[in-house]
Image 1: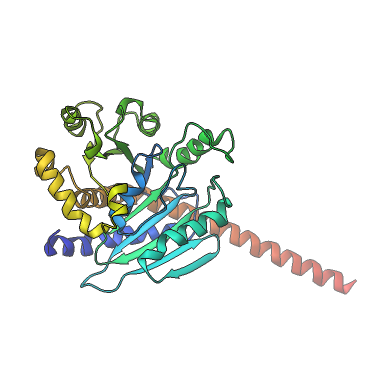
Image 2: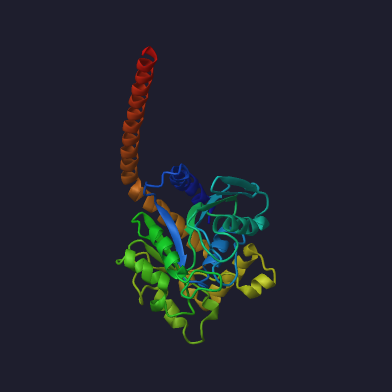
Length: 338
């Protein structure tokens, strides 16, 4: 991204995202706030996409690795500056000194909220990251959809996860980012089905394809058709990324170094998508930021109305409390005279 575009973001984008984040941080749960919710079936590559966007390693592994909703608040530092992080959950707040500590801190938070094991909690974890190398963006990562419970999980874990996801994606203020691997039949993806149920016209759903390097030879044309919105139509369309796989992680290839690998891959394999700006993580980051800000612009009048109504309601309740207090004081005074 050019310096000119960064300056545009600093002036136009960051204040709007900060506004929504500050309202959300006040714990006003009944206000409908614009957000981007990230959903996907298990093993969809969702964690890899979030890692690539944030530049930090997140919990990985088989089974459910996202066991609580994770609000990922990223702020780009102007003119360089040191990386900084903070994690918050249920009355706990802690600075994170190094990026390498993020995964451990998230696991600790999940264990505290959902218990040690494989169950989930609806309690929110907030991770704040400030760095010169992240976009101005806030995402809410939700547990991956599972069909079969593993040992130690409730039999209805799949329905519990869907119910949790539903509470976020059903809101008209939410953009749904659906992560789908290229290695599956997109029509059978549970996450996309859920998004279509709450957003049948696809007006607030953006699809992102992952793992293009793992598709069978000869099926690349199908991938291109999906990204071109020719298979399943979404108003916001699709994008495609390639993130670190297990091989690159084992080889200790850093997230920053892998950006070059991703660029080279798309230039060699899906060049039309690359040239159209529909491929790579940096392009996805730009698109998500602009989508979120556009969404905020659309909902600011409604949000202002909600806040004014909430304020008026609170003022009425405060006046009632003050009146009740005076009545109690008058009663106490009358009693003392008896």
